[in-house]
Image (cartoon, rainbow, N blue to C red; front, top):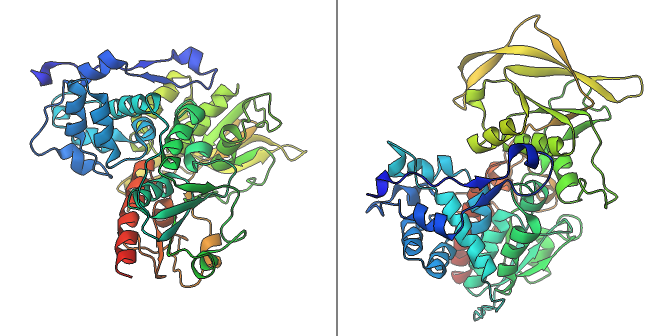
Length: 461
């Protein structure tokens, strides 16, 4: 019977309206919708969805609790493995993970696992009592560097196991990429991110902002002078990449990181703040990932005509299909098989356009995607007054350069095994600092693995 129930659609803001504001696009399920969607789950004996989840949430178990109308039980099940359900329910690529492995998806539509997780996470936030969870301390101290998803996941598990945990954050607000990199219309900051972090404070996790480890203090100092027994490095990958083409130093060229940070963390979209984002009439965003979609949709909301330029075809776009769909609904123009070769400037040093070439696709490269090949003599111009480079990021070298005994790869990522152990005893790492830019849920999974490795290291010390 369950497989014959169609997937419950999720309500969203009208595209024409949402393209002019920063309110959340997706409204999510109400209780009736959530329980109806939960009833579609087959409660498989060997649930493939659990194995496809990087933090291995007991998905059938929490969904079964929902079918019985027991949100509290569903929240309890999820909290065993995830400290950020409201976040993950919004931004995780479920279509390639849990939902991508759902049996119902073989001949129809998979269960909307992400939307159900979001519903449960939001229910938990709405019904939070604010009471602290008392855990007996074991006398060991762990420092967590970075309050992004990897750091938060690691801190949560360690606190539950009795460790005294302190999280150091370089910026003035907690949340890492959750606050500076993901737009408000996809992930509300005050209503969701801050509330998720508040639940960690109830576990007695301590937070300190405006601490740049490598400048304010160092890993060596934390271990050798400040009494920490272990350190977890979850500093992410915030160093932007550029193409190295002529004109990238012109006024009006941004990295996606800078552009989104100004809009998200510094309220650049709000006229009440003195941190405005550049007022562009036409913006070209170079790239095809989720960050590119975030940047181009932010530019649209700031009043600019917005264009995505991507060197492969739409089939190779790495962004989530949902984000591409939403961008198209909002009127974003997509210029596929197009690659910039030069940023054009006026006599005052400001961007006035971008010179591009047409591309064709050859044989697959090492990533499995077909390699783009330039069409000779196909140069053309796109007029614009701002260019945003969304080409990926790499870890900041500050931690490596100020810490003894840490090895890095040629791309600047910290060398760590699958459990997060680095080449320096007592120092663990995970998330984008190790893998390069990836997803929130993969970073959380890495943080949880590292927490277990830290626990084993300290109980055997």
